[in-house]
Image 1 (cartoon, rainbow, N blue to C red):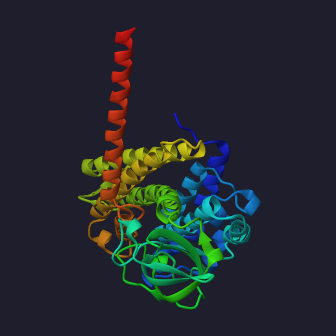
Image 2: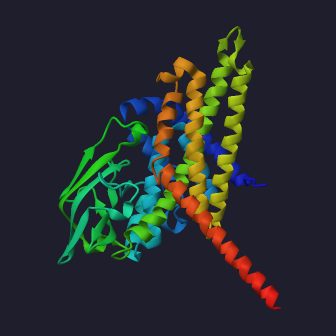
Image 3: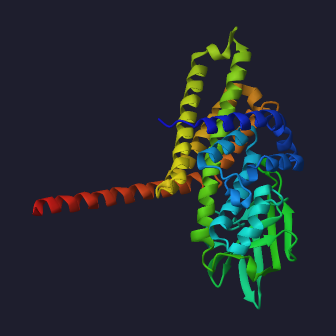
Length: 393
């Protein structure tokens, strides 16, 4: 049985209290205004959440993966948009920690850990989503600088980010650069009217002969997707998976409260058998999704080679589960579930976004099935070899 440590349990209680007091009561307003208050971002920065996964040598909290998962679950339970800030900011931090050179680490990581600067992950484009290695933004080397041209879209917290990790094609090879928001040739355009996570201040980026110093190259030419983006997306996928559990948990808590307060046919809704069936399904599936996330986190902590595929499995199950539970939550609330006066309509919109970002449900199905076939054939090759060896003996 997987059991949280006493330290993890205490941390869970601490962050839950913070979410209940500072986030949940206001999340609906932020969603309507499509805005995250800077004062709130400062509060989560002061608590070390923006440097959660970074080593203490860079000013981070050095948090283990399961604790980081708990952080994402609890923040998402209050506001999935705010959780997405943790996701993209820490994706950039982890990419630099793993692939940045020494000067880049020494300069950027302490600033990212403290939240003095906010980072955004600039990969998606108008014509490029799941096929991320085919980005169309270009980088051409001239003298000591690279010239960027192209466009990025759906950049979470791009409206307020101080620095972007931008993925380009340079000499036909996927390549990553760090780019400051005030860099000449960069135009940031706010996006609004999205289906869900509306407070995540999404932006579109346009690069028009945007000059980037060679010292801002992250890794090497050609490292952009297979190394830098892939490792960052795995970290982000884990964050999203845990966030999905938070949305589902919020739906469950909302439904328990609603069915305990509202009557139909002279009895409380919670007394109806069909309601109890839906609540039961919610409880069981949330526990299953949470355990998959904990398992993925544990494998990350021990650097197990299966951690990446287990993270995909967790993200797939948790995101589809959150969407199903959010649908049921709206159904239980009836007409009230279609009103912004109740949070379940926001949970439903946010849960749909979770099935798209950091690898869509369909991409996860392809990835997971492929790993299954690989495991099957490897297992059978091994078994056949052993059988032949035994026969020879």
